[in-house]
Length: 392
Ligand SMILES: [Zn+2]
Ligand SMILES: [Zn+2]
Image (cartoon, rainbow, N blue to C red):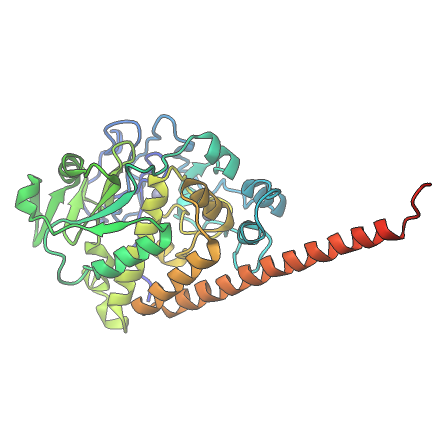
């Protein structure tokens, strides 16, 4: 099942999505989006044909909405190789993990009309550019990723938070803690009623998260089953984040097919909720580490204009983005893939589990082959040296 909901985003820095529902009142087309300051990003969703205006945040490479069709060119192999940076000097295992030429990854597909890259100009961010940007990295004081449930995480649209946390832990290899749920009333968030739908003002939730940021937090991510809106002029938003403050809030309300009246044709709607929740978690964590949208491969860091596009993107990081995360954190790639495979298996995400397990095997095999080849090379050199007559 794929959601048939058409969605449109607003690009606000490296990955904002704010969308206007079809048939509802127009959004603030001429007004700035729901970003209050540089470094803030709205990651949101609302469906519609019309792009509701966009604004790039200073310091971001993300451009404004192109709005006039697809200008994106799929990068060729050389561009993708360059994007990953030179692999010289890395260990066998890291070289195998970051090597661009592999059947495990597809080059990014040309965007369909309405897709993120058809609507937004993005220049891409190579590994070298990422390093030069001096991204946020955890240090000994701030290295825990916190997940804060806002309101009761129950009902359709609410993923298993333990699984979300286990995934985040496997994804980044940092300590991840799920905080006790905070009642919505305690957040001080304002809300509104739209028909039968109760919505919460996302910036109020962000302000609450900023006030609650634990001293040892690398980032604090709020998850809520409540629907959100960024501003009274907007219909809804999937989420918002302030990367400078290292907080973000995301709603899973619209991830469940029943929200769109589509439950009947989906045999496992909860799987979709979980899969989408894990993708948004991986994507937002990437942004918290200073990663911009990926324009090289099909990758979880691709921008997404709608749920159809989100569903199409893989849950894994491409070699370029994986190398960025490795720069920020450091990990053994084979171990990381195995951890991910175990979590996916627990979560019932069979295709993702198989991919991660197979990927671990291939990286390990490629690293082993490199070692064997290096040893053979060394032997040949030694043999050549032995057979060369020494000068008297
Ligand atoms: Zn994004
Ligand atoms: Zn990528």
